[in-house]
Image 1 (cartoon, rainbow, N blue to C red):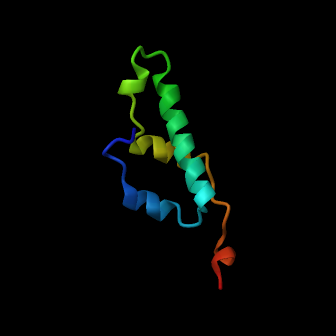
Image 2: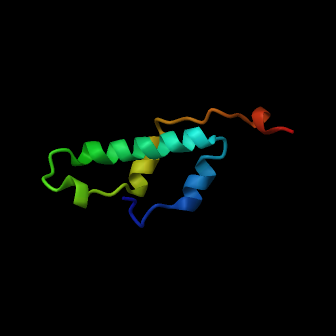
Length: 73
């Protein structure tokens, strides 16, 4: 589940050249980071959230596959 502190405007600015697949990978990576942080918790399914910090960490891992030249018409 996503936390309410996710800054969608910041994510939008930082993912300008991300394709749909890149955005999917970003979300998956943020979820994996959150999951790794919560491994070993007894009630992991009901207690862990994907936060803005997880997305920021994921942005250091997942890079855009598009460049400005890809977007020129």
